[in-house]
Structures are given as structure tokens and as C-alpha cells.
Image (cartoon, rainbow, N blue to C red; front, side, top):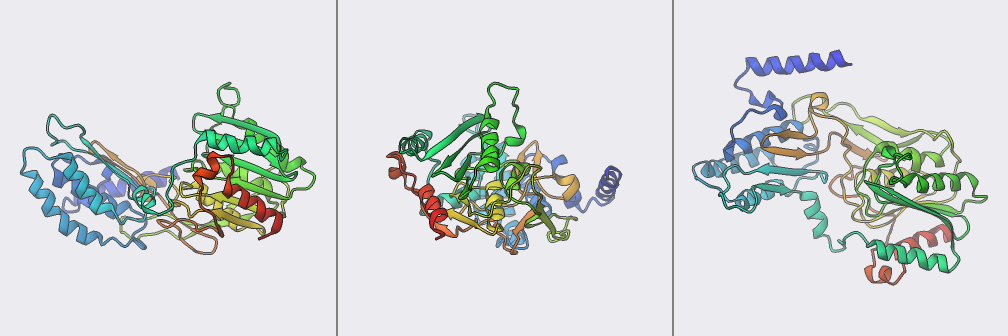
Length: 396
């Protein structure tokens, strides 16, 4: 595989060396451009033209973007200084309709005035779109989250409670209503856990969840709470859903690029999950509890839960950042670009669910919609969690 990689790189580099009229063949990470506004724009445009994986579904007319905006950037070349706010405005317009909700662009303005407060612009259209939704909210406070747990404990509903954290995530797990197993993760960084580190206690919550799966006499249901979870390691699914299945589960399909053309895609590859070494087939309802801040791996979790016989997604439509980030330009002609003037953070693959639906830029729509109620949570009532518990008890 390594020899194939280097052979491909050699072919690309040779083509770049022989064809000076084809700058699009240059690896954008190795750009040797100067830093005029138009040169930075053209490098950005070519990088996106070759590496962006969503051109088959993205509504942006990328050729028109080039034709419309290049003259505007060339006008800025002639100026001695360029306000960073002006570049922010232009790139926000250019990127505002991109469907990749992982996408983030950072550009350094080398022509900023000496007294400029900042020389960097940042564009995140996915965050902007989420904030425009009428149900947008910030992550619930830990005090409010804790008050809900305390209220359920005082009512005698919670047993076997455990919590833990590491530098990237918080997790807690417990048994509620004598048979519903609950597991909350603020991120997916279990695979990075260091149990020998006294400040890394996340495995206490994870191990408690795994123990409850094995030892609870009658499992009434399972709730995987990924609200506020921005994603992380795909391997963490071995700790969440893999313990609940006894046969391979099809989650969806992914594909990457295999060439420099906008639509040079490799075939769709099935994404499957195998049972964990220690597993117990759970036939009771399994709920993925989501909100608008659930992204990436949290959304893949919702997709996987949807494929379980008793699976149900409850909460809010998710962020819509479902494309995996798993490689770089040298392997897939896609993914992150990082050179002295810009960083482009974008998906390296496209993902669709097992039914063939691509949720990028839209989000996973819940089967049962329940909006976050901040006032209720501040008073100790988690309406979204209560609805998940009601579904498990009633089946509706």
C-alpha cells in the first residue's frame, strides 16, 4: 500500500512539474504562492475545486464563484492595506451555502493595517446555519444537568450511578426506573482514555455502562445521550452500540475521492459494526437522544441506532456534519488543507445512512421531536430525557 501511495504521489508531482499551465495539480498543502489577496483566493478556490467531497450535492456554482470574485480580490491587490473585515465579508459570502457542516476556513491577512485588531478571518457556514434555526441553543449547563440527576436520585429512580472525564469528554451512566440503562457522552474520546492517569476517570462511567448491559436482569431500554456531543473517534462505537448487538450491523456507506476532478469518486463502501467481544443482544428499545449540537460521530450514532430493531431517535434535528474526517490529500485528494496562509478543515469522505440518505448540511431528523427547555432543566426537569423514558415505557 505504501508503494502505491508513493507511486501516485510521484505521478502527480511529475505532472505538476511538466505542466506549468495546470497549477490545480499542485498539492494545496505545498503551495508556494505569495500572499496577495487574489493569489490566496485562487489557491483556496483550486483547493476546494479538487478536494471538496460534496460537489455532487452542493448547490454552490463554484465556477461562477471564481468568475465573480477573482476580479474583486484583484482590486484588493492594488491596495496598500486591506481591512480584515472586508476579507471576512467576501469569504463568508463565498462559503455561506456550502453543505459541509464540518467546514471551517482560517485565512491570514498579510495586508492588514499595522494597528489591526486581528489578521485572521474564520468562516464556519455550518455553525452559522445552525445558529439561524429557531430552536438553536447552547449546551446545557452542568449545574442544570446535575440538578436533574439529583432530582431523579432523590425520587429513588436512579441506581448504579458512575461518572468520569478526561481532557476531551465527560461521561456518566446509571440505571433509571429499574431497567433503563442510560449513558451520556459529551464527546467521543474513550479510545484516548488513560486509566493509569488519576485525572482521567472516563472509564469509570464507560465500565459501569458495560457492566449494566451485562448484569441488569431485565433491560427495559437503553438511552445513548449524545446531546451537545460534537463527535470524535469512530472506534468509540465499540463501547456504545457494539455491546448491544450479536450480529454485524450496517450503519451506512462512505466514499472518498480517487482523482482530482470534482466528481472523481471511488465506489460506495459499506460501513458496518461488529459485535463487541462482550455483548448482549438487546431487544428492548434503544434511544439516541440528540440535539442541535450533536455532530459527526454523534450523528453516526443516531444513524446506527436507527438501524436497530427497537431503535428510535428522540430530540432535535442534529448539526448535519456527517462526513468522516479520516485521511488526507495524499491518499484521497480530499480533506484538510494547511499551508502558510490558510487552513481548510473539511470532510475527507461522504457518508449516507443505510437507507441511502445523505444528512450532510441538514442533520438527522428525530423520529420524535422534543425541543430543549432551558427553564425546565434549570428547575431539575429534563423534558427530552423524560420523553425518551416515556417512549421506552410505552412504545410510543
